[in-house]
Image 1 (cartoon, rainbow, N blue to C red):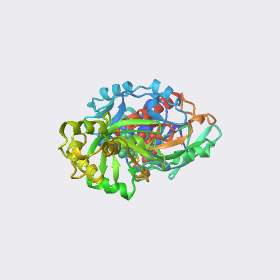
Image 2: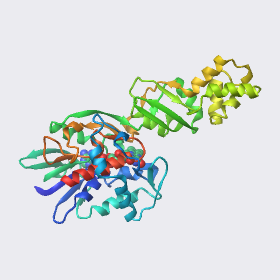
Image 3: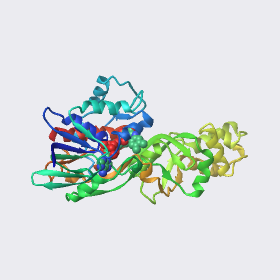
Image 4: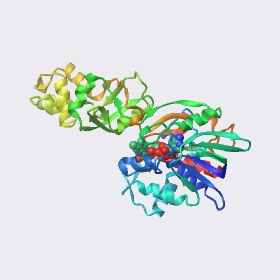
Length: 391
Ligand code: FDA
């Protein structure tokens, strides 16, 4: 059997970063992945430009059953430390909005940085991991190509999102096989799906984008909402999807910061001859204004003819559009998997399983999930660094 010092399962963001932080002269490190290429999710991330960190990283930007768990690793490996690496590699970047840092060029520059950093470790692709067992002081990693033994194992196999790209959920099976608890997994940062009657409004508006605010289940986000042929998407929907549970109703504010009913009443007092749809189009994108006016039976109505009751109804329709998603698009399109290895069974400083010395879990397979905006990569780097210091 082949013997090495450290095996890292998964050559994604967390696994590659961990290998780079763990390399030491004379130490045999093996990174295994069943994919043909490393860092496939990095490649497609951020629309191809990788939103590699967020300067506003703080524990409250993450969902977990133990909200304080991530604090230690996040404090010890800050976004600035990753930016320094990016700068040293000569990768140009820009801040898009709200602390989100993106590459100016392709996201594969980040993968190249990670691969360069882990020189000295061996990357073995096309090797599917089947399980991990303990054999005395060492671990035995079972792969399709045979067994390999190691003194330490870091599990960085990610979550279940986008199975087409190689997600398997094997990290959860490994955790369970060692008696660790799991927090139920579900798709996060994912478009929501809607019933036919809601789609009837959304479909003709496909391509329209509006700034919206949604407060729900502890989340409070103000960002772009995008109408699509399949319903609603855009950053504000992806963000709130992580807080939404099946059966719950959402109230979407399509004109945050404005009291639409009050503004319509004051417009009526000043220029009542104007059409309702025209008055609305001063507050909303024109196509959306026309659609809402038509939906409310006010397509050809004049503002002057509308009693307060109608304007209040219209205001509520825009400031608190109530609708009940029927579900999410699921792991097929989800950016992340919520839940995972229960942090109560991991040491926050080392990511090591409390009852299994030498076995670590990092990245997305752990029950720590960031908001949209570079937080998930920052968690991958920080948790990987924490494990590497100990491994
Ligand atoms: P990751 O999934 O990256 O890696 C796990 C690796 O394990 C994979 O290479 C997989 O092939 C391998 N593996 C799985 N099962 C295996 C098995 N049985 N045997 C061997 N190997 C196995 N985040 C962010 O911060 N900014 C962004 O811009 C984006 N954008 C984005 C876009 C899209 C479309 C998606 C889907 C996701 C994002 N994300 C993101 C989220 C981010 O990609 C994610 O949080 C990290 O990739 C997680 O890193 P991990 O290394 O934990 O898992």
